[in-house]
Image (cartoon, rainbow, N blue to C red; front, top):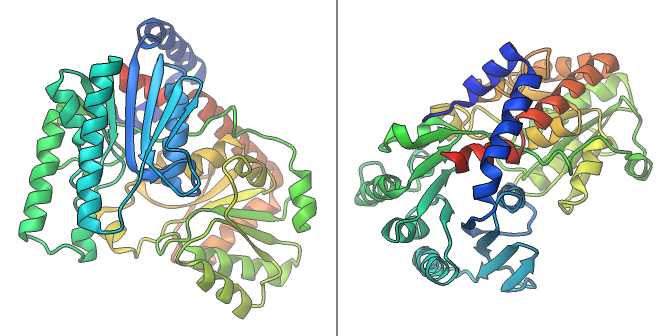
Length: 422
């Protein structure tokens, strides 16, 4: 059975959320009894948790959802200094594995650790499902689960085989690429189910075992809430505040957000942009804001804990999800993620300005959930900001629609139940 994100969303528009909600409830009741007895391993051995980046958020939120459906979830992730190697949080048991700085040795360690931990937990704890986050030469847990006759789920969140070739870090048609592709196909063939967000990630894998999904948000954590303390702290004005949250990578189009804010500030000094997170473009962004004379209007918050994120989103009126189409992998493949930030914005009932990609059009429909733009055109981004800040009722209407969609569809529980039922 193959489920398309687009088909789910199209269906929701035709039959209405009430019908989807009823079906979701019936599915939950049908699945809860057998699932509640299941034990599951979630292997994300190259991701630290808790952490400050999208991978950490994904791993944490996905496993928080899975613990509601299973008897026990074993999360195997990367150890970071100061964290416990073994930690128990009710029915989620976290096993952290130290990393090595030498790339080849780290890759070998990750594979062997995944393999050995999966074998140990299957044999000693009678684990039923092995769920592994894909990476180059990964799949140790998938292979262990396959050999020990367990259900295995291979989660491919990006086209990890193609990206290094496009970026030039691995030469096309080299022996390294051939080995990578061969191993990718080998592990994909041994997985019971492969989940992904984009067709570019599944070359060489049997399409009958592929499930197209989105990521989501936790509507119990991310929801409308009072954020007056944040507004007071940063002297924010209602209906004048923009927000970006992310890792400041080269493909996050931070420059366009800052330039659009600068255009708005020329007409209205109360407009401010909060930028949350850190990364390679962080200092460049600060220098750009300084050069444009808007350092007082662009607030660089830096890293914050996951617990703080919902309140910061609620302090804003309009949220950015811009992804630079000039980034080589996007230029070649299109945008291939299901961005968690969009789901979190939606869950907090915020209007969104997002890049106009087919993948994102499933999540942000023009003039319904937000506005779609070409992020390389600053005037287009500025116009979208102007429309939403000058029409607060329109922004609120979009936010209400977004909240409804997350409650019904774009949440971790909805997609995890689909994954486990197949």
